[in-house]
Length: 152
Image 1: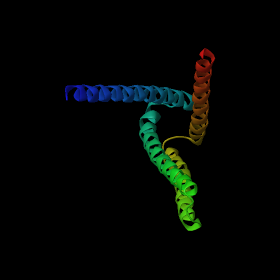
Image 2: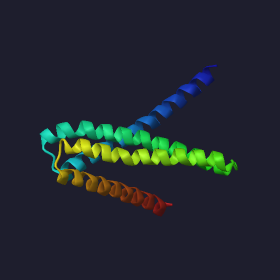
Image 3: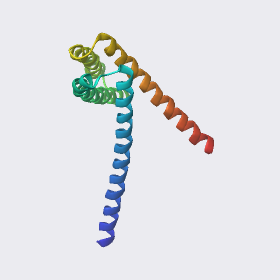
Image 4: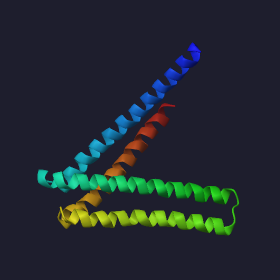
């Protein structure tokens, strides 16, 4: 009984540490992104105060939508793999496309919100900076993966 308890306690502790590491990593990337976007957009403190709450809502909505897209994708893939009939696949395909379409509408919706706060120039800078930041993160990840592979 004591061994079982200690094993469970150790497992919970280890998984808690993994979650903390993941959260630390996510928090660090988020802070880097905020600094990067703020700089590239040349936001004033007054603009930033109004912009970031709207941006955070957009990010949350996008993340929730992406989750729906991935769930629909996995269901569609499983349906194909299990040999479901065309009618079932059609329904899942429609669900997947609807989720993708919803995601595309989020950007337009929030661009309208951003226009109440920022100039079009700054909004354009936002989208360019987001893509630049995303690419930087991919390159950083690739460099880290390559350096790990070189050590093997």
